[in-house]
Length: 129
Image (cartoon, helix red, strand yellow):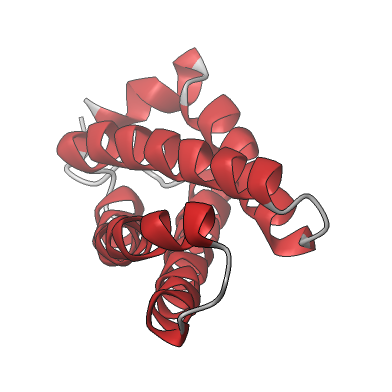
């Protein structure tokens, strides 16, 4: 048994996609922070901008860390990545419903869905033991 099993290209691609997802979350956090302080007229949405922005910031930073852990085939990294991508998917869904014309919300949702589908395949999951 080798100490470092061969990392499949798919895992490398997912780790890179997670890093991109983390960066998108950081950009989202900045956008929500801007909306929260801009005093825009829509009070019903403005009250949730700051909390969603904070969650997006935390998720973005954690996704970047988990991307590294996934790259190294760390089991805890796999568990945390699947959990965080699930949260990211929920946030992207909220955003896509709130602003259906924004394509980046749909892209975030698609990335989260594809990543979860790949990482939960039995052969891939078995690499992270």
